[in-house]
View 1 (tube, one colour):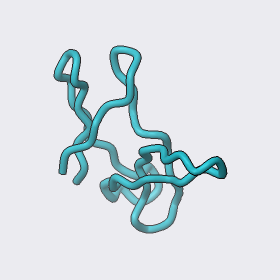
View 2 (view 1 turned 180 degrees about the vertical axis):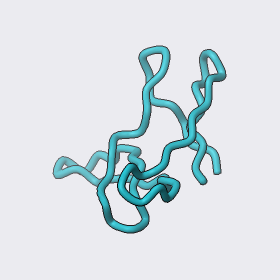
View 3 (view 1 turned 45 degrees about the vertical axis):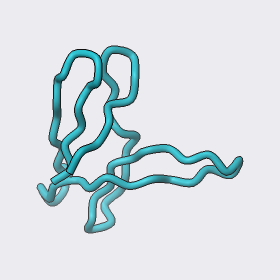
View 4 (view 1 turned 60 degrees about the vertical axis):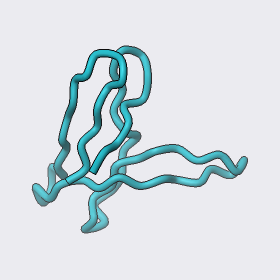
Length: 63
């Protein structure tokens, strides 16, 4: 399971899919302008979300 942690305060979070209760996995989404955005996605293709924020910044992923 991917764990997202705030580099400022140290808070961490694990996320699961609301439809199948499977842990979300870390991934990157390539935007049309070539930039990449860190996301969390359901490995069973139920969707994806922008990775969590804390202290006004993206939380980084550690596996």
